[in-house]
Amino acid sequence: MKRSVFFFIVLLTGNFVQAQDAVVRKLQQESLRQIKKEIPDTGRKSWRTGGAYSLSIGQGSQNNWAAGGDDFSFTVNTNLRLFGFYKKKKHSWDNTFDVSFGYLNTTSLGSRKNDDRFDILSKYGLALNKKFNLATLANFRSQFLKGYTYPNNIKTFASDFLSPAYLVISQGIDFKPNKELTIFVSPVTSRWVFVKDSTLAAKGEYGVKHNTHSINQNGAFATIGYQRAFNKVVSYKSRIDFFSNYQKDPQNVDVFMTNTFSAKVAKIIAFSWNVDMIYDDDVRLFGENNDSPALQFKSIIGIGLQVKI
Image (cartoon, rainbow, N blue to C red; front, side, top):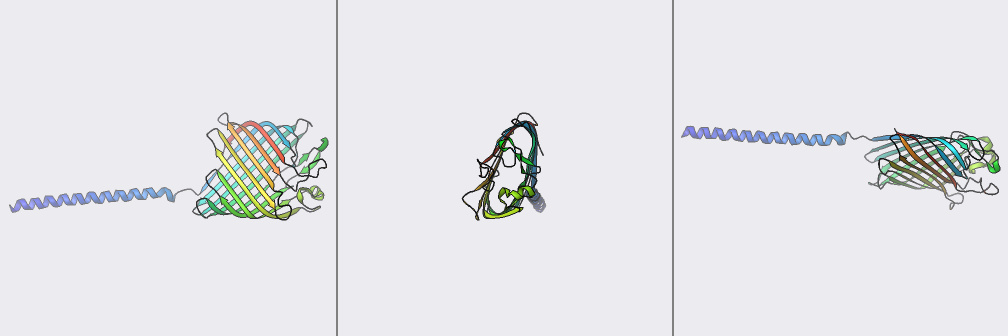
């Protein structure tokens, strides 16, 4: 009887130890799974970079374009668009660089000319909540080469490298409701207009005083950016800037807008349509006496090579 009780106790103890070991192993496995689950969060990338390059041939048209050009032209156009977006905790830093260069053969004058511009935008944000940032924005845009207008079929020098050039420094609120849309609004903005070329500066072009090379303007600024890939074929990118000069005619708001629509027709072949619009109250080169501002419009439709970077 004693021996039976002894064997029963040994058997019960063994089963208890095995059950305890099983519980310990299960806890260890669950602990390992929790550690593995947290690894991707600590290794998440802070930078997102990319861009696109395109080379196309097509037809261009423009009206009242201060930098120079003709109403209709055959074009060979190349564009490079790069971006670098940083985000970590409450900090974000958005950077874009756009450059375009075109060769135009005008139909009415039989002339050839270059059409180009570059645009650099950098914006730092400190998150107030999930959709609003306190942000500081800097934007610089100009062109590389000389441009001409043709009033009454007379070739007239109109622009050059850093003539004009625009620099905007702004502090405001950035609203990002989703990944596609961003709206920046600032009541505190300083804008500089530069005219490096002495010939243009002597005429007082682009709002600078005669024989001076720059002017500073303080006012309100807003910019809206939208970028969306509707599917693997069709995409659209747009940006529109508004600036109101507190010091002179604040009701006459300057507008700069650029739009790019593209649709792939093959793996690296795409149809593109670029539309730019500018209204600058200080650019008074239009009208009957060439002394009035006007809406500047440029459209380029083409087809060619398009690759992602």
